[in-house]
Amino acid sequence: MAVLVGLVVLWPGGAPAHERTGVGFDRQTQQATVSKVESISCSSANASGGTPTGDTSTAEGSSAQQQEDGTCKKATIRVDTGSDKGRTFTEIVQPDQSRQLHEGQKVVVAYEPSAPKDLQYSVTDVNRRVPLGLLAIIFAVAVVVVGRLRGVMALVALAISFMVLNFFVLPAILQGSNPLAVAIVGASAIMLIALYLCHGLSARTSVAVLGTLISLLLIGVLGSWFVDWAALTGNTDDNTGLIHGLYPSIDMSGLLLAGIIIGSLGVLDDVTVTQTSAVWELHEANPSMGWRGLYRAGIRIGRDHIASVVNTLVLAYAGAALPLLLLFSIAESSVGTVANSELVAAEIVRTLIGSIGLVASVPVTTALAALVVSADRPATGTPDSAPVTPGAASAGAAGPAAPSSRGGKGRRRKH
Image 1: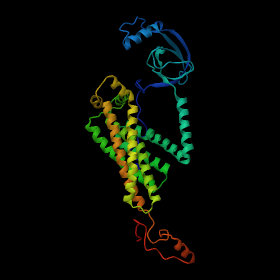
Image 2 (image 1 turned 90 degrees about the vertical axis):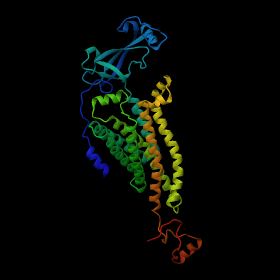
Image 3 (image 1 turned 180 degrees about the vertical axis):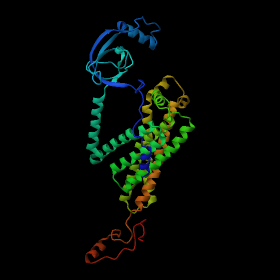
């Protein structure tokens, strides 16, 4: 009910409109095809036409010399979508460019209507729809083949998660709502839908939901405190700078905090569901075990889970920031200098806050699961709880057996 109220109160009704700046992702784009590629001399293709100067032992001098003496490519690109469909333009590809074009290649082009007619279109990226689509199909097939019905439900939950992000979280933040509140409500909605859809409406799933929610709240409180204490603005690169320029009302530090919460949710689900399932299976194996015994056994499993999950989370963030770490390594910066820069400090806070939430979710979820499952045991004195012996079985054939005066260890008394 709290999540539903939050969704109603914060529902944005669509992202606010703005005028395109033509910078970065905020550009008009169309699909196009490279129809022809021919080799030409770079000296005749370069607009300046001057002889390069400078030390050729440096990167800049070597690149200039290569552009002067090397062989460039003149690509003719045909626009395939939009009002200018069928229109062609040419683009010069330098020999040292990382992206080389070839005939028949599908590309993405940017359109700038205010530019001169021959400069309105330019290639910005390669069209990767086919390989990405094929990879998505392979992923879906693998999930369904291995997971069967659970796999299908997981894919449905994944689609709903993207819908919540696209139609609620992102537009609500753009409308100026508090990013922390939006992230908590959106993450809670994703959690409820995904867990109950994939694992069923049961006490076991509800324990995982409670453990995840408590951990998310802890991450939100700690994140809010340390983001403010470390004076992290959240404005660390060109993309965040563009967002702040287009929507000055957005709290960028709050946006950083929202990213921490949503980024931690996926791993939290894994930990809480696994811990809950472990406690339930321990109870099935030994129904007479009390909640303290279940907790001790479950927490031993959780310690192994903590060690692997925390390492996974740290390596995931390190992998995402690997180019940045390489730049600091090239500059021979000290560890303290690297960690103190806001770009790296934000990732450190993101990683450590998320890891604290993961660690806390293990004892919290294990304790909740042990309390709930230990309360669901057969009462003393019922036929199901009476110990069965060969003699009792023979007596049972002749007539009703006397009720047992002893129950299993740790079982509740019948009231």
